[in-house]
Image (cartoon, rainbow, N blue to C red; front, side, top):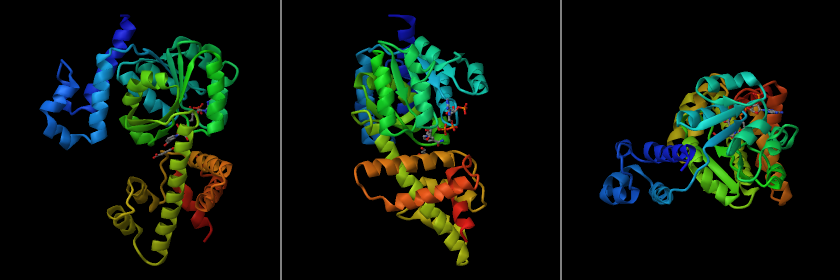
Length: 358
Ligand SMILES: NC(=O)C1=CN([C@@H]2O[C@H](COP(=O)(O)OP(=O)(O)OC[C@H]3O[C@@H](n4cnc5c(N)ncnc54)[C@H](OP(=O)(O)O)[C@@H]3O)[C@@H](O)[C@H]2O)C=CC1
Ligand SMILES: O=CCCC(=O)O
């Protein structure tokens, strides 16, 4: 066994023990999840949902199989999401090599122990698996397939995991370029924002090569709290766009409610509280509502990306003749907000587009 394989297996054990299981189990040196589950049934019933128990059992099985895992991990794109995701990999002990268009964003990660390569091509050439977290379809294609792109450096035995939010056509294009080199491809966009990225609590929506999915599962588990494998390339992108279409409309509707409550003499902060206790409660309202009532929009999810996702979701809907009038109306609001110069604010700044209309 190579030292890298050994290291990767230890990382795997670290994730299984430190993250998936209650803390006191993490100190167990001989790890036998199934027997722990049998012995500690009540504790697990209290702390783990059924699917998490299943996850533990599956992981235990895979671990027993002692699968070899890729050890050198590349990360391309160190924005709001990419930086904390790469940081979590480094902190978990992974051997990480980073690249970002604006090189200065690599520096904090290099300080934490990351290696640096000056192009996506060189990252992909030097790593077993390379993750990419880029802004939009154009940048995702350029970084994967452009000059000095990852496809120029990748090859048989390696994997490319695109975690950016893009449309299915973009994902399939990148998939084609990567597969042509003999490498494997997985699309894996994430649900969850800046804080879940920092906390390793993202939800991965994956599709593509199943063996690569199995291989990178330990890394997904470092960065996230759950993962879905959805089959053919395009399904992960579609799932992500549907989720963000719903989210964009919810935020637009919430904005209308906040402004209406204020106009009729109610305290919008009380509205936030009422909403958060009822059937339409959502963490997003409780999280963003208090700052929205103060007209503050600290960026977690940039408004320009939410509008991009609505645009892509509307394209998806059109491709199957699905009517989406609410999302279409929400998209127009985000476009107004962009024209007001709010692109880089949090997407909750969409409320400003409604204020401007008064
Ligand atoms: N923020 C969030 O809450 C979430 C975002 N997402 C999705 O994740 C992706 C990244 O989002 P986020 O981190 O917030 O975005 P940021 O805008 O913070 O980061 C975008 C990244 O893409 C890079 N980039 C942009 N254009 C190019 C280009 N032409 N060539 C090379 N690199 C480029 C940027 O490089 P540089 O630093 O040089 O500008 C940066 O690394 C998006 O697809 C977004 O929709 C998904 C879930 C949540
Ligand atoms: O794409 C961004 C998603 C943001 C979130 O899920 O909170």
